[in-house]
Image (cartoon, rainbow, N blue to C red; front, side, top):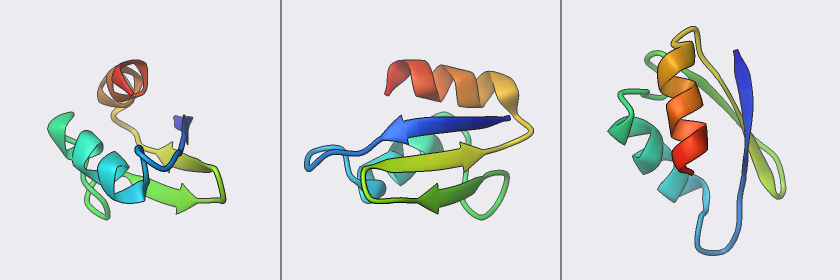
Length: 57
């Protein structure tokens, strides 16, 4: 499953990685993170954790 996370000044890539860790998703362990200018695409087979992380973001 791949989910898009919007990035802002306050919610940057570093904050996203910390947020993913709180939901037991780790890069490069069990998810893949692709950074663009204002979004990050996160892919993982752990769909429940990824969906919960996106909802909480």
